[in-house]
Length: 285
Ligand code: APR
Image: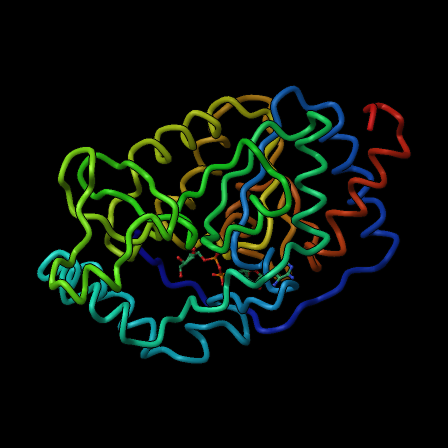
């Protein structure tokens, strides 16, 4: 995972309500007609669930640049000493503690409803908070992993977070936890900076980006790769419409990768798109 610097705007700019209405109607019409629509999401979709994003005005990295520097060193520390890495996890304070208490907001619920009625074929998220799963999305690709899971770094097997009694392993001086299938070292499923994206998720996400005829991109600054390459893959094909729903423009907007952006909050805009599709009666709900 690599970061490309891009100046961030620091205010949510609302567009005129008529223009917003028009764009929401346009997005609803395109999604209702799409044969294979997919959604891509980032931390912006979870801010209305009380989870800060990373690069917005109150983002985790914006507020604490040192934490970002620390995060850049995490994977190297894991590779050099997985036992110590786990010890730090068990004793230190974690940035992600409390995520499991968060609840989906209307934006998450709207995306789950769009999948339930067949408009969305999949959701590919950078978020590790598990809120899309909680909202009911089934065909979900967690590109940066999930706080609810552990993963073998050799065979890629996933395990529920409490599958290993790590406190007991620590007492018995048997950290790190080892994979029961291949004996590989197990780590948290969340993908650290510099860590390769798990091959199954990377491959399936690429396939979805190739297959889609509509891509709905929600709440991401689109500056982190390789995730940010997915819209560019979709852009290479004929007849694809790429729609952004984000508080501020992104490189996808600036470079014309997206066809249009609806600027505002995902928790407000996505439910309105669902409502317009319902009104159109073109999709049975
Ligand atoms: N509705 C719409 N957009 C929002 C909202 C909201 N409620 N809240 C914030 N935003 C916008 C911000 O303005 C910003 O453009 O969402 C974007 C979030 O961008 P980032 O904070 O960069 O988050 P993300 O794109 O998901 O980051 C990618 O970087 O740090 C790593 O692993 C981390 O998965 C993460 C990756």
